[in-house]
Image (cartoon, rainbow, N blue to C red):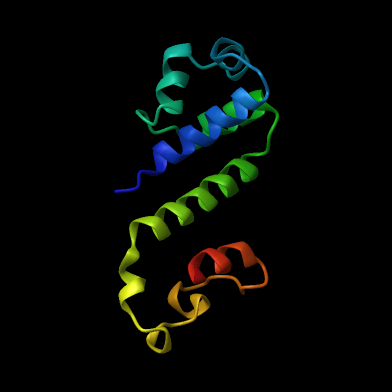
Length: 118
């Protein structure tokens, strides 16, 4: 099973490491305990929206960017975990926009369409 908290923690850790920042620096700026931030990054704790906003503020990135990256990672993980489509003949598959209610057109996320086709 794909856990949202694990993907979120991975994204937050990657952003922090990419910036060359320590857990201590970010936890101090975000006003969250070092241990709790570590647990969030390891996917062991569910972070509230307020805590996420504080961590994102400490990292200097918009929450929407973090959620977008998490969403992209979640989509990839779902595709990798669901090889069921490989058993469905191409002519019987629904286009991606009909498979996911409310999904955006293929032109908005062409890389996802390419991953689905692969």
